[in-house]
Length: 90
Length: 185
Image 1 (cartoon, rainbow over the protein chains, first blue to last red):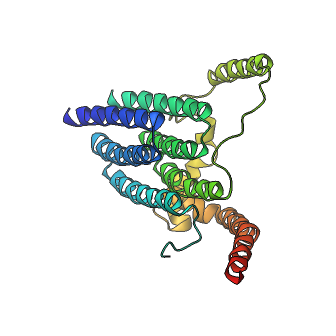
Image 2: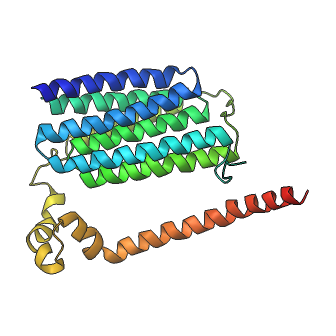
Image 3: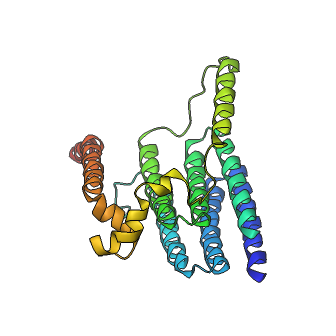
């Protein structure tokens, strides 16, 4: 029961993050919204893994967390420097 | 019950995101929304118990594709060009007819997870019954990908590798030359 409620709460949070991604207004709102949706997907998969009894799915949730992190770093690097090929130390 | 709720909500999110992608013409925002889109579909794949597909979708769709599209964006402009307005009635009609035909087609498809479906009857029983003794791999999906279709997977990897080299030669070489010229000046 408690896990169903948790899953529902996560879905509500995702819809709020989606609204922020659509409305903006600045770039950083949207980047943060994508990161938020990613984090909530990780949580949703973890909750769903416990709900359905397939706890091996928690590994997938972990990998999502890693990919989400790399994606956000890549986006921020592009926003900061305008390209990917300079090191950014100068 | 909660499975169905998650399914329906994620599908609704997918639709909303797709419509937003069509409406918005700032390319950076579209790439962000593509990331959200593929996270939602990865979540759907997990709910449908296709963990390996979800893995690929998250790694390629949300991870690498986003970075690649951002890299492309760095080389081009940030806004879609305004298109000349043209008549939309005929394309809309074609899309509607195709949709109706496709929906009609789904009535003949066996239901989700049906063990009597033709796709489950062809080679799958053999994989399930004999894959461990034939390949020694415990996971059936891995056995199919890495052993039964090993050459196929090797070919795919070769294609991706070649494509990567091609892109690096085309784009990376030019950037390197431009940087060197700037250093000389």
